[in-house]
Length: 115
Image 1: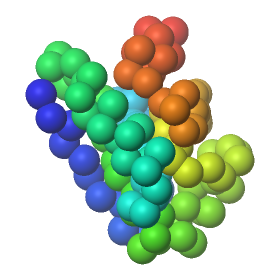
Image 2: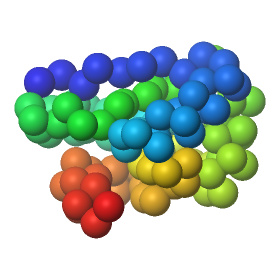
Image 3: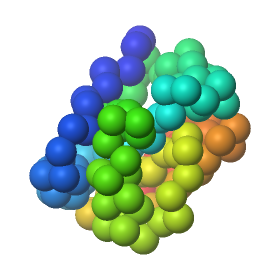
């Protein structure tokens, strides 16, 4: 099953993600479209994504187009900005983040299982 990415294109999307995270876990993937490591991380997420993963919303941020939003995400969720990076948001807080080749579906699933 392919990941259904919801694009993040405005600062108001961050508040929407926080609100949605009260109902369902939300994953943010911050992607640098010019970085090979980011492309590998994105490919690995999409290739390993389980078909039964319907209880999570997946959001995508193009870092080149929306640098200011990336900084706002880091500030809002109290994480150090990295690229590529995933943040798992639940109850309006970042409960897990990873960057570069540490981004794996297995690690995300483990974080989800502790909720």
